[in-house]
Length: 60
Image 1 (cartoon, rainbow, N blue to C red):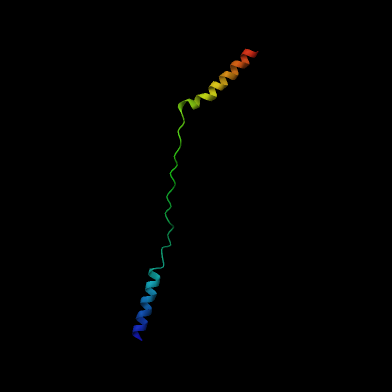
Image 2: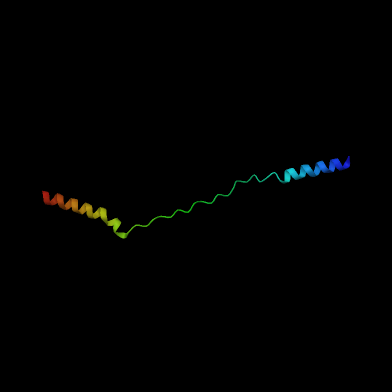
């Protein structure tokens, strides 16, 4: 009878010990790589604006 109680106690302790972890898993953030553009890309809009203003001045 004592062996049955001891075996039941060990079985109960083994099931609670292997129950698992309740912490949230650690998820690493993805690495974001920005693509670089040429240095002349930022000058396109001002040049286009200058051409439009020059055309407007020449037309008037």
